[in-house]
Length: 137
Image (cartoon, rainbow, N blue to C red; front, side, top):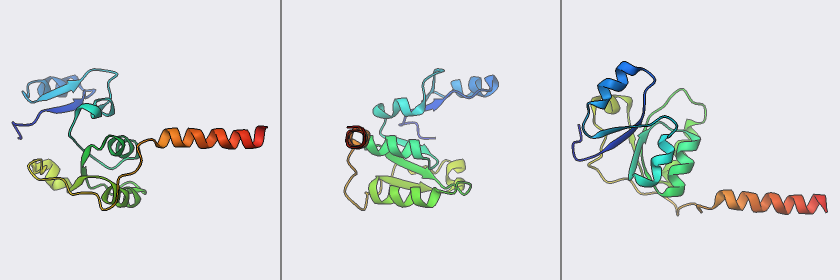
C-alpha cells in the first residue's frame, strides 16, 4: 500500500516480524534507541493511536495526525476533543487501519481553533520559577 509514501516504524521485538518487515521497500525500521517521536521533525504525518506524548509532540511540530480509534483509554475523549480543536488530523477506524484505508491521499482536516503556543515547556518552567521566587524569597 501507498508506494508514493515512505514509512518509519519502531523495530518490533520479534526478529521474525522484523525480518519480514525489512523486505518492504518503502518502510524503514528505526534502530534501537530511536523512538518514533524522535523522527517527528522529519515527517509530514503520523499514523497511530491517541496518546498524550504523541499529541503533545505532534501539535508542537504542527505534524498532521491520522488517529486510529481507541476504546481502552479513559482519556481518549478529552484527547480527541483537543486534537479536533488544535490539530490537523484525520480519524480512522480500526477496520480502516487494518484494511490499508489510511486516507494519506486526503487532505488533513484543519484545526477548529488557533494553534496552541509551541513553547509550553518554557512557559511552565518560567511559571515554576516565579512560584519558587514567591515562596522561597
